[in-house]
Image (cartoon, rainbow, N blue to C red; front, top):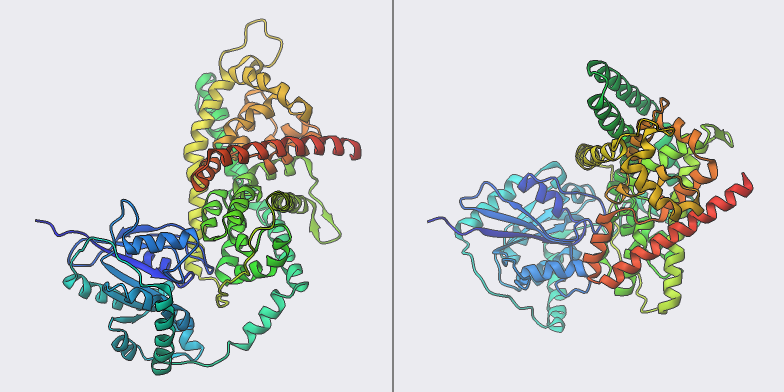
Amino acid sequence: MSQPVLHFALVGNPNCGKTALFNCLTGAKAKVANYAGVTVEKRSGPLAGLSRPAELIDLPGTYSLYVASPDEQVARRVILGEMAGEVRPDVLVAVIDATNIKLGLRLVLELKALGLPMVLVLNLADAARSRGINIRTELLAERLGMPVVETVAVRKSGVGDLQAALRSLAASVQTRTGNLSLPERSEAVESVYARIDALLAECVDAPEFTPRWQDKLDALVMHPVLGVAILAAILLLMFQAVFAWAAPVMDGIEALVGWLGEQVGALLPAGILHDFVVDGLIAGMGSVLVFLPQIIILFAFILALEDSGYLPRAAFLLDRMMRGVGLSGRSFIPLLSSFACAVPGIMSTRSIANPRERLVTIMTAPLMTCSARLPVYALVIGAFIPHRTVWGLFNLQGLTLFCLYIAGIASAALVAWITRKQQGEGNSFPLLLELPNYRWPNLYHFLVGLKERAWIFLSRVGTVILALSIVLWFLATFPHAPEDATLPAIEYSFAGMLGKLIQPLFEPLGFNWQMCIALIPAMAAREVAVSTLATVYAVSGGEDALGSSLAHSWSVPVALAYLAWFVYAPQCLSTIAVVRRETNSVRATLIFTGYLFALAYVAALLVRQLSAIWL
């Protein structure tokens, strides 16, 4: 008879290294970053090397079992056995930051009061030693009545000792069912803090100051004026790099795709199969694949900023400005995450305890320009904005991209301000956020993060975009034009019919039917708008590169209006679905979808009209 599965739970404060330990112990590759709020829902994986089957659960970070925010409630409910359909953990693996042991011990003592078997992990032990912190682990283990292990999770140091401790517990622990209960909070507060002071006095020797260089750097990057200038400079550098640094690699990919199309085309006889492979598959996917270098550069900056410890400081820096529009620094991390993808950004709003602020953050997160918009932006900017230097320093195309991002940010601020005026000020709480230590980005996690983002993009090219390219080629090819046709063959196809059907709706914006047809599959993935345009214009007989074809077919005001549409339109079904899940409200989801489409239409209309006057 097989033994029942043991369930171990990783519990700890935000940004103490739980997810890095989870990756070490399970072989997973969950995201690791140097700021709080990365894990917003529980994840699990098999825990190998034990004498019996076991599962390890990585819970969202929490400072206490007496919690308010949705992500912290997930951790508490799983630990207490209150989560429907989830098994209560048999063993708790409490992880604390060894450089801030006082903060972590509060949660450890609350967990100990539950009576479950426990292991205490002192992570970031190397950083603690470098700062002169000496922890007498054997004495601490004796006083707490549980094993204590020092680790450096990002280097896998001490993981073997932790595995040994888990094996020892697994041999004696019995699985149990039933819920647990917490003591009254007033009793817990009185007992916990007195015990923490006693433990620190007996088991820990620590200096009473932080490194002076960190204080000096904080004074600079969190200065109300210089700090904002530094943040703006970082963002501007990032967008300049997206165009300037990626150009040589993009040219190489474009040449490779063109060469591949020529080689494959030469092997296939003229006809339907030749058109399908060359114009449908290679042209469709190649037109999106060429933007991979820009996406990698964008995420390289984001990952470096995440792991350095800069992002929470930016949250504090912007807290006062964000409060002016009805948000706070708590919204900064979810909004910043939305620059990568709105789906995890919206999910990370679970760390916001205030329901009104959380809802406003959800409603504004998609206005942050996600990476899926980048191929569309890069295509249109490259086709219509000259590649030249302005003010002797900046690339005009990079400045244009910067302005598109700023437009999304400014619009999010405006929407939040209007919502605050409509709903009232609500309760306002000061921003309490732990500032992590500065550190050089971990090269391994940096490269793994880049690899994962590149793989996500490539997998979309090979799955969603490939499938939609095939569908679009079929729609753009059939039915064939009649023998007496006087227009290009695509005008008589299903794609031409569908585009012309919806084109009157977008006629005030100046969108032609090709532009309209690209908006439909882009609801599945925004990048598909590029492959759609590539397929449509390739089937139309265009021999120039896609950008050149667009430059000959669109006017500059219409191109700018198309960019404005993509800044605002909710062209992503996954985002709409996660809004429905996180708000649990059909009404809120309909309002979200409707206001973004309305905003996109009005913005595109205004941009077209104003640019037609000025240009």
